[in-house]
Length: 471
Ligand SMILES: [Zn+2]
Image 1 (cartoon, rainbow, N blue to C red):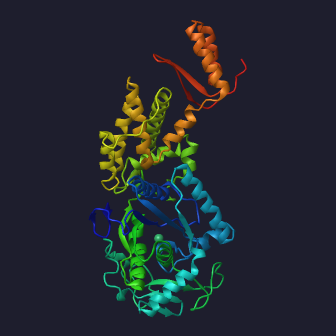
Image 2 (cartoon, rainbow, N blue to C red):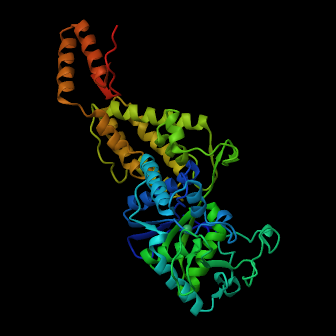
């Protein structure tokens, strides 16, 4: 896998044999998460599934930022939760709960597995305070009139560990107003003294206040995964300052390496441009659904792009992936009616090609091309090929996460009444009573079974039931 710290693809070696500890920077729950935000969690989900497929036991932790994320990521703005709470006239906790639930609904629609631990920042204030105390004791932090700051000059290489050179426009005075309480322009807040009217504030050794965004992730990742853990992921926007700050905080406090592999997802663009509320191109999962798309078509679009180059979202691209999804499902349903999936052999060439693809830095575009080879087997005249194709596809889908096997179960399940009608229709056809057979086909269609006649007899697939029209 590619490691943003070493800036190259390196073999993955776990800290503890057979185990993977993984932390994903979670959402700031002050608003809906658009598809660009959600895409980063699709990528993290594929990474987790890849390790599970390879036999690792994964512990996945994701935070929920429900305090402390400042607009513009610099220290001088306003807290996003605070602003949104005022905008929507809600208590920040109510707001956080509402948007967290919506986020999880969208995750389910995209078949993103729930992390083993979902940690809310507001429930880990004591861990953050303890970490700040450790940094103060080691001389990495200082208390000022308006909070506690990290002194970046005490941490060699600050800002350069993840290939994110300090951008020039962020030099002191150029763009941000330098707070006179800071010793250096790049020093960042670990704790902010409460301002009058702050809706979220806690007691601390430095008076009432609230934590900085960066300290949340350091405190919560180490609380659940230990001082050193395997993988930390986030969007490319997290490279600087967020992840550089996390490294400085964690390694400054523990004196140990923090993260072994850093994984960063490139942004989603719309028609080749960034997503911005002002352009009106920030789409939600519900926008895709309103246009008749299955959210999993969006998952496929992401898989077909690969996480290390920007994902270009276009409606045409989404249509292509919806067609692919429909084509796969129809081929699966057709094959599954007359063949049972057989688990792929260890030396199966298609399976080996898939393992090579996904093991090459999660190369999902290549993995999809391999999956097409499995789909092609589904239309083979040989039943053994169809069985192998199904087995391969269900196996591969443990990583792709399109829910193909459970979809297939639903699509091929037949209730007793339909089973009787199908048997009756088969008998009618055998007896040459085609008028009766056609009538039964219509009846089955109304019940949600689309029947087709093939050389091997009748096949069916599940479709939405429709009510009888009066004519
Ligand atoms: Zn984070």
